[in-house]
Image 1: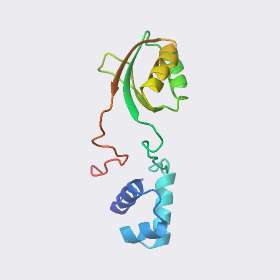
Image 2: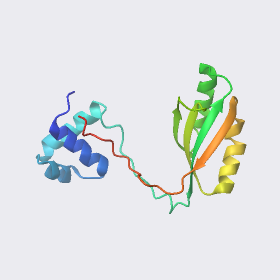
Image 3: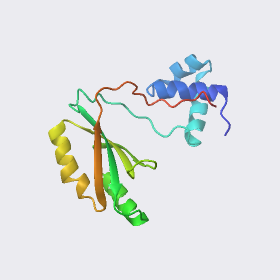
Length: 156
């Protein structure tokens, strides 16, 4: 599916407000409601729209500490990586997990927790106990400068 300018406008509006009604979306992009709904459905079916989610307020939920954690593994085998990844996927505290290169680490995790005490328990009680983890280096977010979920579309 080749994206039209109208499709890009739809994607831009939806990723900035996923709760937008079809009528409001149609008005914003200059389409009537039925064709607008059809285009959204086509974008969903084609896989351009993965999901609709709500972003919760982490401060109101007392989640005040965000850590970026570099994890080093003892062996670079598919089994070792699969085991690590299957365990980490189950941790609600892990917001993102990347297999990386170019660092002295194999994984980069973004973790959110209430405080340093919880973080210590999470790190020492769970993360470092995963078979194969040999090194952990943590950095803590002091302040968010950019925090968005919208993907850039200007290259299309």
